[in-house]
Each structure stands twice: as structure tokens, then as C-alpha cells.
Amino acid sequence: MTNLVTQLADSAKDFGVQAAYGDPVELGGSTIIPVALVWYGFGGGSVDEATGDSKLATMKGIGSGGGGGGYSVPIGAYISRGGITRFDPNIIALLAVGIPFVASAGWALKKVIRALKH
Image (tube, rainbow, N blue to C red; front, side, top):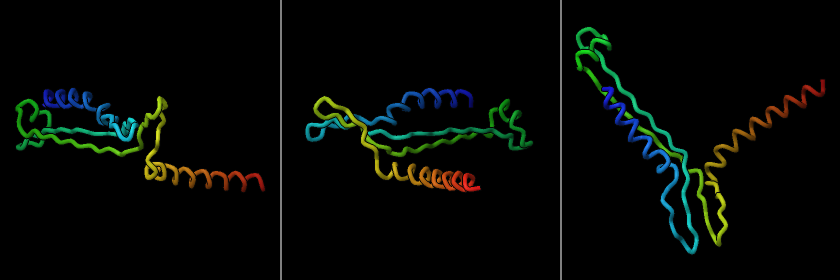
């Protein structure tokens, strides 16, 4: 099982950055590089079927298993046009982050104003 986990970890570090930054695309005289938040996870386990002991199962090499998965959230793109590069955020991702931030800031401001009145 240790060998499998090591292989998964080695392959995961190779595609981490490549998954976060997409391949450049030429479109209408501009170069666009998509950007995303990417995360993934892997897990594995082993239990002796007879005793339920994971250490005994590791010694015997039985009852092993594993799994993994991940996902990405597109947050925007770098756009190069005329020698100038800028980051253009994904509006949906910006709202998903902005709405809770504005709500928290409003709640905090309400508390500060209430404290100053007393």
C-alpha cells in the first residue's frame, strides 16, 4: 500500500500546477490563460478481515483499498493583449467570495456602530 500512496503523491505533484493554469489559447489577437483553484485528495486503508486489525492486515497484505478524487473552480483568466497582461476574474467566482465578505463586513460594522452608541 505504501508504494501505491508514493506513486499517487509523485504523480499528483506533476499535474498540480498544470491543472491550475490551463494551456494558453490564442483568440482574436489575445492570449488567454485560464486559472482555477484545484484540489484533490487520496486515501487508502487496510483492515484484517478476520480480526479487524489494520496493523495485522498490513503485515499480511490483505484487505487493502484506496480511492481519490478532486475538483477545480475556475476563478478567471490572464489575458495578454498588446503587450499588457491583466487578470480578468470569473464574475460567478467573484460573487461567491464577495457576498459572504460583504455580509460579514456589514455585520461587523453594525456591531461597531452599536458599541460606539453605548
